[in-house]
Image 1 (spheres, rainbow, N blue to C red):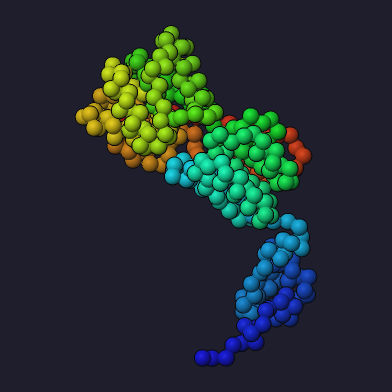
Image 2: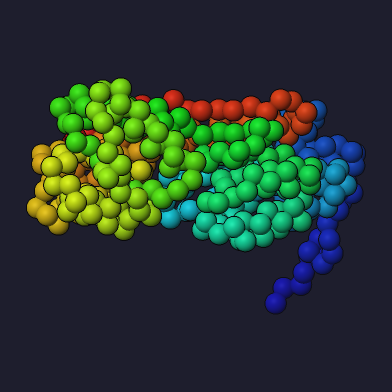
Length: 339
């Protein structure tokens, strides 16, 4: 076994790098912190010297010295839904570009787990938190995080709390677009499938009901079939709708995952969306374009929502005392073969 080099036998310091590169200790420190005050040629010489010596930057120690952190916590409620995965990608893209490292936690709609991960993020000294609340979250969670002095943005699911930044989509407007499209296609008996409870569900039902009323059609709540907002729930809800209301010719789904399950339920009965039954999704996840048939849906651009949530959080970090901001993405119809 070859002997260890002197550099490998002990911890390399910035003094070693300064000597190797022929610069001052302060110059090395600024380069390692990513400062733009140092000329590009000098910075490259310092980085090359650090690499030759095997130096590893202790970011946590530097953060303790500066009293700052480059870690952002992101709390997602349901990563099994590709919508939230796409939101996360958008968040990470924006935060990484801004020099932050993202730590993600998945609550699986569990309130106790949500509290545990928020507490852990506090203990890790995160610079900010982006939270998609678990179902049933109390608005006091905002007060709790803010009392820790941690910048917070709530996303996708709003909480009844005025003093917090929020990023989401206009759910009622999106469903009104979907129902309006089905009405324009001549459908008058339109169901709603999927979703259970919570502010997003109620907003989407409000859009469903208001679109029907605006068209002079009486709302029949017997055509609303609630279920878990996933494929299994969509299959069960569509099966129940077809059994209870065979004259219904169209439906809006709570989200695209529900619509995927509904497509399967239609297939079980020998029906094809777009030909025998009109079906709308909601979210426009990437898989919607490749469903069988390709799914018409409401596009809320989940990746962009993630980027906007990250932007709100970065702005809150920079200006902790500014007034709370709200971003509501404007939905758009994407029409494919299922309607």
